[in-house]
Length: 335
Image 1 (cartoon, one colour):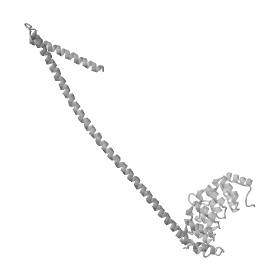
Image 2 (tube, rainbow, N blue to C red; image 1 turned 180 degrees about the vertical axis):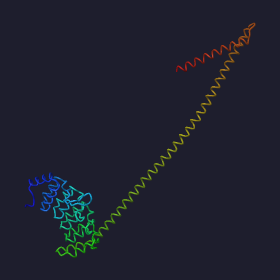
Image 3 (cartoon, rainbow, N blue to C red; image 1 turned 90 degrees about the vertical axis):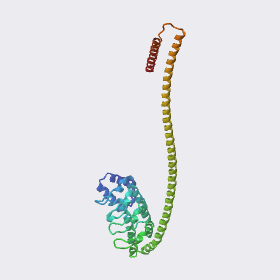
Image 4 (cartoon, helix red, strand yellow; image 1 turned 45 degrees about the horizontal axis):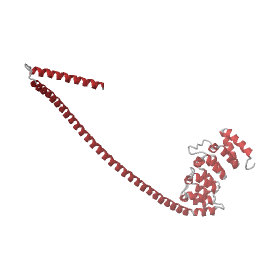
């Protein structure tokens, strides 16, 4: 069978997968993987991204961190970078999902002679994979890469991401170098030589971490200074506004007191005015009486009863005042 499928074959295969039941989908996906028909599988994934989320191992659950997906399976068989990129794009969480033995796709790639580009793509999608132990023998990807004689470039890529892995021990109390030294392949010396550069990567990593820490502290210090400046500016602004508010409150209180005093003065003046008007009315009434008496005396009226005349005059005045008050009340009610 040819390594790739024609466009017609690919389309037919894709349509079949998209309408088939789950078991048939799994079977067809596994057939494509086992046959290493990477181009066909890549086209299928691009046409239907849900294929990348199909769980291929019975009883596994991706949400629970366990499940063999297409990415796990293809990483066992030296796939193309194009296919791996398509699977990661279709299902980004696949790089974090654990399959059989708690292997991530990176663990499988390290046991299957994957090239450095595949490993780079997996680590780029999930750098934490380099620090993840499997659930079988507590091995890191670097342990597996050394045990299975991976390409030295793969060793370097992993150490670049997590150089301290060269010192980590697995469940058998072995570090990656222990496995590299027991290799019986032609790549043994290259793997050992790559591992021997590990301490340099660790030093470089520590230097980078130190530099980043210094830069981080510098940034934090700058942020703290900026924060302090802003807080100080707002504090000064708040204090200024508080003082202005207190001054305005004080002025308002002074104005209120003055208004209260003015009100008291007005009330006193109104009382004085009322009293003055009352005295004036009394003076006017007395003046009218005196005027009347003077007039009566001046004409020398014979047999004139002064008291009766004054009493009649007072009654006239009272009637006049009563009329004036009634008229005033009527006018006020009209308004």
